[in-house]
Amino acid sequence: MEETFRKDLTHLSWDEVYARQMKRAPLVGEWMDSLQLKAGDQVLEIGAGPGYVSLVLADRVGAGGGVYAVDRSPEALAHLERLQKERGISHIHRLVADAATLEPAGLPVGSALITMVLHHAEDPAGILDNVARLLLPGALVVVAEFHPEGPGDGPGPPQAHRLRPEQVQAWGKGAGFLVRSFHRQTPEHYMVLFQLDV
Ligand SMILES: C[S@@+](CC[C@H](N)C(=O)[O-])C[C@H]1O[C@@H](n2cnc3c(N)ncnc32)[C@H](O)[C@@H]1O
Image 1 (cartoon, rainbow, N blue to C red):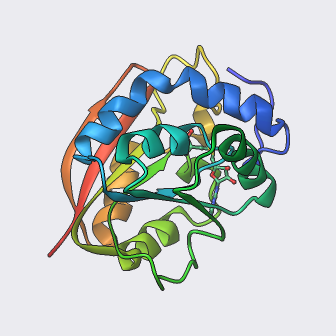
Image 2 (image 1 turned 90 degrees about the vertical axis):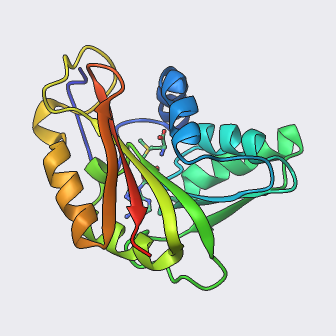
C-alpha cells in the first residue's frame, strides 16, 4: 500500500500511473465483456488517465468504432495522445473535462466505464448523475473500485480512501441506474454493472 495518497495523483508521474494501469490489465477483459462491447461500438471512458484502458477499448471496438476518453487532466490525455500517435490510432477522441459537468452534446453512447476514478473525485455522486445524462436509455456502465477490506498489498489508495460498494451502488441508484451485478474481481478490486433505466 502506498504511503502517500493525493486525490489529484500529483504524487505520481503519468508514466507511473500508466504502469499501475497495466498491472490491472487482467480486470479489463471482464469490464468489456460485461458491457458486451464489440467491433463498431462507441464507448465512453470517464477518467481515462494516461490511457492504458482506452487503448485496450480501442482495440476491442476497432477503427469502425470509437472511444471517448474523458479526463480532467490535460497532461494525462497528452500522454494518451503521444501513444496514439506512436501507434497510429485515431478512433480515440480525447476530451479534457470534469466528468461531473461535461455537457452531453455529441456523446450519445451506449456504454461507459468509470474505473478506479471515483475515489479520486471531489464529487463522485455528481459524476454518476452527469454520466446518466450522457448515455442512451438502457446503456450499461461498469464502475470498478478498490475494496475497503482488500488486502492493500498492491498499488492502490489506503483503505481509508476506498469507497464502500454499498455507497457506490446507492450513488448509482440515485442517478437513475439499476444495479445489474456486483462482485469482487479479486480480493482487492470490485466492480458494479449498472444499467440506465429505460
Ligand atoms: C487512477 S486514474 C484511472 C484510469 C483508468 N480509468 C483506469 O481504470 O486505469 C484516475 C483518473 O481519473 C481522473 N479524474 C478524477 N476525477 C475526475 C473528474 N471529476 N473528471 C474527469 N476525470 C477525473 C484523474 O485525473 C485520473 O486521471
